[in-house]
Amino acid sequence: MSTDSYHMDVSGIPVAVIRKDIKNLHLSVYPPEGQVRVSAPLRLDDDAIRLAVISRLGWIRRKRAEFEQQDRQSRRDFVSGESHYFEGRRYRLDVVESRGSVGIRLRNNAWMEMRVRPSTGRDAREALLYRWYRAQLRQRIPEMVAKWESRVGVHVADWRIRRMKTRWGSCNAGAGRIWLNSELAKKPLPCLEYVLVHEMAHLAEPSHNERFREILDRTMPSWRLRAEELNRTHLADEVWGELLPVR
Image: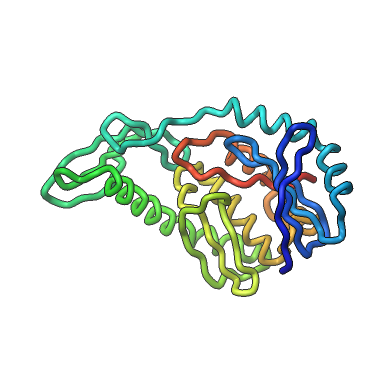
């Protein structure tokens, strides 16, 4: 696909423009700073792109204001007493040094116990937690895939988990493969399910067009509420999720 990237200023707002061989223009605003990005068809000139952004300035400013007000946590050190999240619930971390087995377990609805070897450093503790997050996702995703394949009308040939910087999920429609962000382990299960169905819908329709929205409306009528919940609160150590293009 042919692409060309550059920046323009619109009413004092920097806008990243990416020209692609696509049919429709898509406008997105990304947390945490409210970066504005436009994916534009190759046929549109700069004046047309600028007018499209100007027509959505009110929406852009509202989204940027929302991001400024969102609660964020400081960088995690993975020490006892910190708050960490799993499936939408906040847990206090209890780090226990042990010469026996290492791992993570939820002791109750309030505490997440991390057992580590003595002198285990911060990065190793973080890696341990994210291995546990991925393991929890692997337990939950197969049932969700089986549930939604027939409803969406697609076959997921493969799915994988990784940490991503700008997206909650992505897919390769040709290979039938879906990637899910490991940060989703922190979010409520309906949010994980929404991202999965969103990417499954892309296996049938690659673009964020009317057909794509019709697939979501038909298969998951609550998808807009789930998307809002997904992007409502962000943590400083999370990757910032991509919002859907404007309607």
